[in-house]
Length: 497
Ligand code: HEM
Image (cartoon, rainbow, N blue to C red):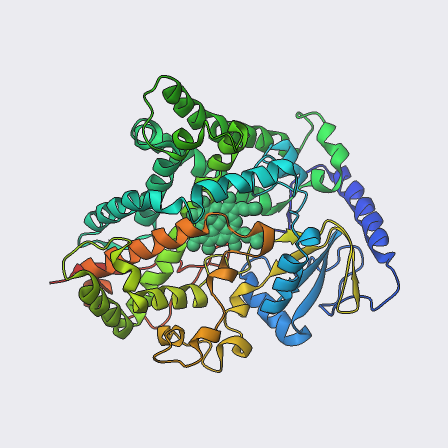
């Protein structure tokens, strides 16, 4: 998938596009005095760095640019300046300390207006509805509420353990299925899961594929907004059809399950869920509860299952670490017992291993782009309003200035004071893999609990080994898109005797 493939639109559109790119280029060239900007690859006239911009494996291309140009790299895409940040402190400075400027999202006309995904917390600009949805997440999945879902997660982890009995192959689909069930049950309750769970999973999967596809193309309407008024029969125009399909899918996700649970609440028949518990909460509106909850599946499933897949990959290739994790679990919860949230609190080595796995293989290695909502001046450079910022967290989590000379090695001990006297000075991995500032992932407490309980349940029940007695693989291919995980993990879950 390329983020730079043009929609096969009308030839005339290309002319309009060229003119508009030229206009934007000239507008962006009209800068205030001061150093031009940060270094970066030399842009072409009109199209900027379109030719050089990576089409996949972004983290590797960004790392190569970092080596050549330094910590902050400037790239031009048509009409949009881009900064790539490679230093943790820089991401913290712009995205957290200057959050009033840097908390926007790219104004994607196709996604936001035509598909109508602009209502979602993911795509909203900072605004009253956005802050309301963030408030809902804080209330329903924040530190004070998160324990409400422990029993559900623990039960689901044991169901997964059963499904994995003597399984060989790639566990990703099983993990996605299990986490999908957890999040739909949390959001809408067990009844809804039983009656409509599979359909809702399918609609959400379709929505994620559609958004992935739409983000991977360059759409004429994003550059020439007036093109949205062209009739849908216009030759070569694909966006009206894609937009209609997207609209239908997101309408279902937004309204359908909420409507069902609301009906059950009104009839006094609803079981426990985020919706039934909070629907009459005077501090949050029903609309923001509905819209925040609608995005839970979208945010939770691929991210959490990718984190777990990467953990299992590390267990496969580091059998010594695997043994230490299992020994600790046996000591803490007792061999053969099912782990629960309370019993794994003291499993420090497991926690360190989970962190080390997230550090070396962060599920979203170049995070989610932020967009500046006003101009900024930083490090002597002028940064225009409408600049996109990408955080190369994959590099930040391997930066030897933070992690030391062994930064690329898998060593959970680095997080434990009994092995590393400087352990307490290390950065908190989770404060980068979940993003920064006002947009930091609002599902992070759930992700952490879900991840660690599943990891404990799997590791206390199984040895993670290659299938058919094969040797441990020495090289594994990783995905190059938004998510970072093995392309196809091949493992066997051998029951522990
Ligand atoms: C290991 C698991 C997860 C990872 C690595 C992850 C990572 C992220 C990242 C990097 C962002 C963007 C932050 C930014 O823009 O700076 C994000 C946003 C988001 N995440 Fe997560 N996430 C995970 C799990 C979850 C879960 C379990 C949920 C929901 C229950 C969730 C819901 C969301 C939502 C709704 C947003 C959009 C927030 C906004 O734009 O303001 N995520 N996540």
